[in-house]
Each structure stands twice: as C-alpha cells, then as structure tokens.
Length: 303
Ligand code: 13P
Ligand code: SF4
Image 1: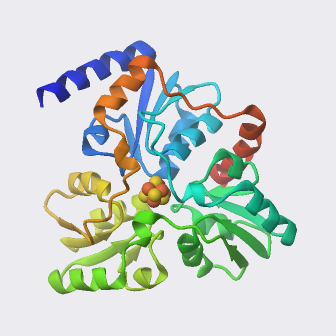
Image 2: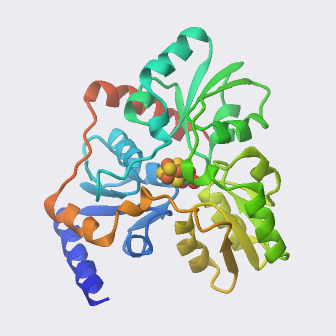
C-alpha cells in the first residue's frame, strides 16, 4: 500500500511536469482506473484523445487504442505502459485477406470495429465501436457491408439492418468463451438478478440477456435500473465503475474467466515508469495514419 502511495505521488509530479493526461479503459486494473484522469469505453476514449489539449497522452488499454489516439491526435506524444498489451481479435484480420474480400465485393462499404490495427483502418471506409455500431450501419447509404473483425458484434448488428453483411470470422477470446450453460447456472443461483451482456458475446448468449450493450451502455443500464442485482457478461474490470456507481447493488460476473489478460498486462508501476521514461511511444507511419484517420473521423461524425 505504501509503495502504491509513493507511485501515485510520483505520477502526479510527472503529469504536471509533462502536461500529460491519463486515459484508462474500464477493463484496466483498479489501481490504474483509480489514478486515471478519464475512464471510458473505446468510443469515449477515442473522443477524449481527439479533443484533449494535453501534450502527452498516456493510454492505458490495449495497443489498438493507443494507436487510434495517435492517429486522431498526431501532434501529441502517445505513450502506453506496456507495448505487449495487444488485442487478439485485432490480430485476427490481415490486410491481404481484407483486400481480397474488397476485390470480391467492390461495391461494399468496409466497416471496421475499432479493435483493429492502423493498417486495417487504412483499408476501411468507416470505423465503429460497440457503442455506436448500429448507428454507424444505419447511417450508411449502401446495400452491402464488409464487416471486420468481430463476427459476434456483426451478427448482433445485422439484426438492426436489412443491408447484406459479409462477416469476418474474428472474435474476442474473452467474451466468446461465455456459454449459455454458464449463464443458466448463474441464473439458477441468482434468480432475482438481471443478466447484462456485451455484444462481443455469442449470439445464443445475447439471446438470453435482459440488456445488451457496450461497456458504457451496461454501466448506464445498471445504474438506472430498479433491479438491485446483476449477472454481468463482460470483462471483470468493469466491476470498478459498476460498484462505484451503485455501491449498494450486487454484481456477479458470469464466470471467473471474463478477464482479458492483455488488459491486465498494464499496472501502476509500469504506468509511472512509462511516463518517467516517455516510452514506449506509439508510432504510426504517416501514409497509414492519414488514411486511417479518415475512417476514425467519419465514425466520430456520425450523430
Ligand atoms: P467497448 O469499450 O467498446 O465496450 O469494447 C470492449 C472491448 O472489448 C474493448 O477491447
Ligand atoms: Fe481484445 Fe477482447 Fe481483450 Fe477487448 S476484451 S482487448 S476485444 S481480447
């Protein structure tokens, strides 16, 4: 505890010295969320990165999030606590495969989940996050959509549109692991609880949910619901904000495996060290960054 107190004090000094802002995703360890200037889901964090007037952005999340921040704010220095924090789903799609799909479907609009590399975003018409995916799809004047990389989110979104959606076969290792059996066991154990789920989960799991939404959607729903008890079908880091918002409500994570190991690679010590050393920094080659920025900006413009 004393060690963490020293780290927090050092962090405050460094933040001032470097005019830095600390952004943290809701899946980060509590010790990081506690010291963040701003906590958010993928969408809110991208928006914040685009708007901040700090000189340095320390992005606590996974690699693609830091990369998106750098693309949206190219003049800022973007640091991440550990460059090994990647997203396996983002790595499930490659540029060659996507180009081949585009050749097969030349009239399709490419919609890419923000959980993707800068190279993939550079091949994309418009990005989305789980918070705005339905809005993004409905804003498009096209009959055919190439959707990368999350098949589960793609399947969920396809229920809200008549457009033809060609889905890439990617998925989130963490959310895709949750099964109907897991949820049914929890429902038997906590019969009065509502089941809330992230759309990165499998279609049959989403089917039995009381509420489906992005991290921010889930937080808002649980805060406002009359219900006092929830079975939560998303990453366990969200417990920090859920309990902060509603200290008297009960939150049961649907399994103990709802933990993204990549998100947990970051910790307070690495965060302080990264700002101290000003590394690792995110670099995106300019010819890729310019194209990728258009697809991210198009997303931010969807109302
Ligand atoms: P959101 O932050 O959009 O809810 O996405 C969840 C996620 O898996 C981030 O990696
Ligand atoms: Fe990627 Fe899933 Fe981890 Fe999010 S929770 S970073 S989608 S592996």
